Image 1 (cartoon, rainbow, N blue to C red):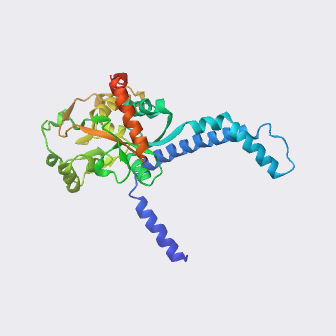
Image 2: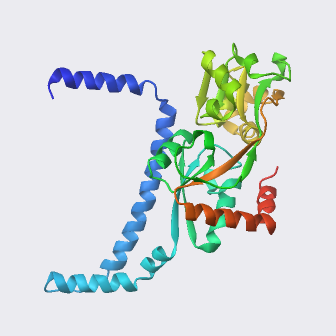
Length: 312
């Protein structure tokens, strides 16, 4: 590659990078590194099981036979074979549906309760909504939460799992009418969650195409600050997620100077119908196993108990 082509490629890469939010890059890098670290520790554990107390051998054949015997009898390998590990793409910013700090939440608990009794081991990969979908469609993930047929290009959809109540939220001081439509937002600053323009209906999507002040972000906790502190006109998010993050922000000692702003009254605008979300699986069999487990925990009361666990 000559110097001019190299410089041209670098310039093109720099231009494309300008369109990527640095906040997304940082958080996804940290989460991916955490996943790599976890997998590395598992590999080291397995290798130590094979290597420790291994005698010296005069030839490679004897060593191979010994390692094969250790592998076939190893308790660790037996457990690995027995479990059906599922790599699942999970949004990292939607508590109480998913709480990354405790590896729990309504949706993760439902997934675990439905599948773990029949031998599946859930491996949560905390990623942005956008990246989860991209990796799933590339075949790198076994499942992804919060799937919609309208934006899914591959995989098998489960039965409806949870219902989100997405709403528009404004500061009461702005005195916007409670009953509004998407067209009302055309000339307002609006911050929504990732892929909202594809999930919230045609009228909303049309508004996003006309509104130069419309943005989507992956870290939904930032929406609270943008509304309460930075004076954005509207944020679009699930009502449970908003209440969770607002409570966290109000109790955060680092935001004590912004307490008066965080205590401002807000107005809810119920401009969207409740949205049923499903889980998507790469394998039809795993999807069927999940549906069966979901039906079981719904009938025996576990599903309802999970929701009670996270009610405030």
